[in-house]
Length: 195
Image (cartoon, rainbow, N blue to C red; front, side):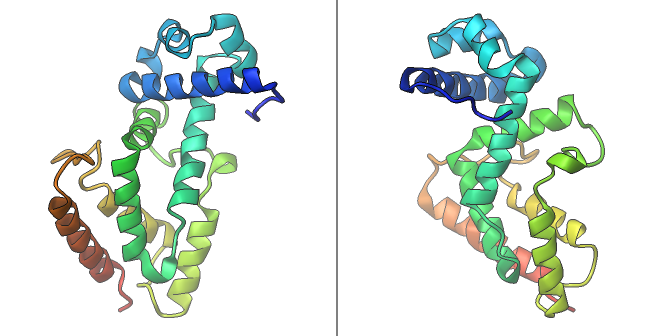
């Protein structure tokens, strides 16, 4: 949903709703999120929220697709250095753990199998094209570019908020993060190196 044309006051309310809803959805998912908590935290009312977003599902979509765009902009792919891309993703998960939680809720509640988003909403075409070009240049191992991308993303999430083993936080000692970054960088390098 495109952001409506708003006054300065309306834009501030719109942003407060997005911020409150991001936290609510990240913590509780789509089914567990409550509009009442969102409007209370945003210091607004249901009528305003519904005027901007239509319903809870459309509000989630606005936030979720915004989070996908944020990841692309903050950590754009460099197919010639997928190891560095994985480390930048790791760092983004530390900065914004809510983004990975939103994707997890979308997976659990909406798309338990297949692609996380529909074809027309997918934002990975540029990534796949970049990987295919790196493969053609002999920089990245052969194989389906989507599978290569999926492996790198999965490796970057090893210590993310949705890890089944250990969820890292930004509050941990810098040495722990540097140790993980080094391991991640080397592991991805080895995994995607051309044959």
